[in-house]
Length: 295
Image (cartoon, rainbow, N blue to C red; front, side):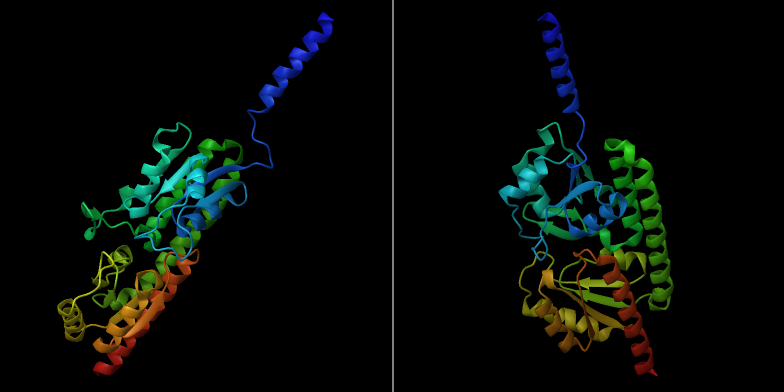
């Protein structure tokens, strides 16, 4: 009888130990704020880690309120990669309580936000510009941050993650070099946007960004006239860039009045890097058309 009791006790101990190991069928869960982060992280981890995105596709990042389901997903995540300073992120942190649950590590990319004065939300004035993912160089820094974090929580797959990261690094550097060469002749050209979502792209490649309605408010007639006058007075090429998330119809109308070429992109989707590449091609075309027209 004592022998059977010892066997039973041993089985209980072994069972308890086995619950501390992650089953192959239940991968770790990691949360990110937006789809561009999802893309970068997935390129590193493949299917080894389950990725949950807090901002659904086509949602307005200015006014989105996370669902209870997403808040639960966030609380069950080992890591949360935040952009920092996005309005819906503040709601996530205040409503989910992940800063105090002891299980979810918050990793913010806010250190990359070194452009300010473009955003102001409610009482949060003079916030840094959060659109860091529109810079391929910033994306590489974000990807490195992701690699460092996931190799800590899943060291068994560290070699696999590093190999995939190196491939992504090569592609990001290649994209950056390509856009740099393509836009070198376009230094000083202007893009007009309804929301200042391309600040880091413009900075990296020597493009001027003129924006209006930074807080998604209706533009006044005076503001509209100032934008149109600024576009018409430019000695460089002017391109109106619209995004569906930031009132594309309004920017299209202004483009017609300003006589500017119009380009529509989506930098909040998974194919955001392709969108940035396409944008650079369109800006180069605008530049060439302006040069041809000026002769």
